Image (cartoon, rainbow, N blue to C red; front, side):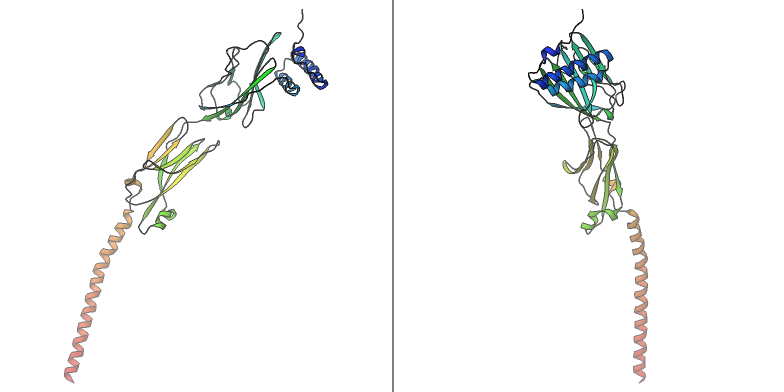
Length: 309
């Protein structure tokens, strides 16, 4: 004995337009059963939305953070899929627009579809009892918005997951830069040193510079891999404690500033100054003595001339 589709009776619209759409849904559904094409069921879902038979909807978004290479499960929050349930998972980097998984459990069928195309390939696993979606060995390409739609009888509910994937962080590096680029040397009468704190190839990370416990400056990276850097201009012999911190929701790394190593007056210049002074002092003394002797000799010659006169 064959089973006829039940949704004509459950979703009959009172309007002529609704009746026409229901007839179209019936035709599309029968074609999907014959062709076994999961994407057909997405068409049925859209047609149902056009009829407007799902009643009140709820929509909420949950942010999920996960490290590269880990697995994450997006829960439907239902104990078990019931008869006449339709579970759909949509995905998109910015907005969910691609069907990636679906379970349909009606009285005459149980259909499961999991997207095996790029960027997921073999990364998706769909729980046949709860409809929860697991992403294995997650990568940056899996970051985005996942939308869950649960359809049952005359009701539908939505839930969105904003999945953000993070990578392990490197340790910040603090190095000296040219003093010519230092704004502190322009502000101060004395010498100053210019430093730079930086990290390379980080995604969704924040680089911060601290003076003691006080935040001096910070910069955040985008969803794309990028280099982050923060300049620090300070006076020589600064006794404050400086640190550079890179962080994300999972971890952080700190590098302390070694003032003795990176911010000391250039010893070569001091040695040069000492050598110049050591050379100039004898020269100056010699010149002074010569001038004094010449002046004294010239004075005696003038005195002898006056006596002869």
